[in-house]
Image (tube, rainbow, N blue to C red):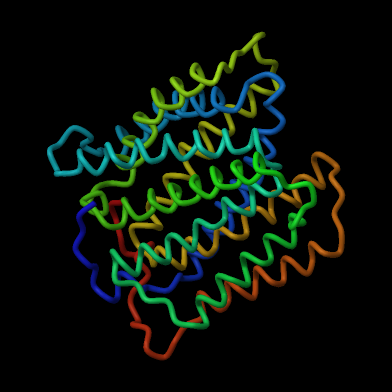
Length: 318
């Protein structure tokens, strides 16, 4: 991947109040998405869920791009980066879904949220973003909070479980890579809709072939609940929240944005309590405090940080 370093003010811009509000909404949506996937599993296997989700999201994104006047087929030097983005996104979900078959869901959530560390390392190398010692400490605190909320370490961990953990970590690394590809290539100058369409369209054959390869089958026509959950995943999660995520990635510090995703599994645990009636203990409260403290350290303004206008208020075209 080729890149040129971004200006200091762009690379390290702190999140505005509006960006923080949007990130909270995105994390809440993604946290519930984990519940949606689980509830749809009796009707639709996981890799087929990913395939159907991308297939249904693609026309939604094409309509949004059409109404916003985005020129999708204009030569803008993004083809190579777009192909790489789509392949990375597709392989991310192949690794995550395969890992889930070998390790527990709770361990998978913890290891998937190694992604902010990969983003921080990649941002330092490719974008010139530099996290201070306190910000690295904030990342560690947030990760510890996620681990505490989910309840690791767990007993009875064998080689198969560890292999599943490794696959999930690989998925987290690829998740981080999609953020860095958008930020460090020509895609950062392209409309967010075009970047996301690259990602979704190319992931369809990858996820579909993986579903066939691993022997997943849909044995009956999905019921109303499964269909409504797939609509939620395709229209809201991929079609809208992923689009907003791309807009934010193009406008703010990748490391600081990625750190905010630590909140997502906490929303997932809370949703599990209210929807699936999973047990919620006082440990969850302590975990939430660790995550919040970590996010504060990562996003805490520093006297040396540049003061710039909020791009969400000034940018007219994503």
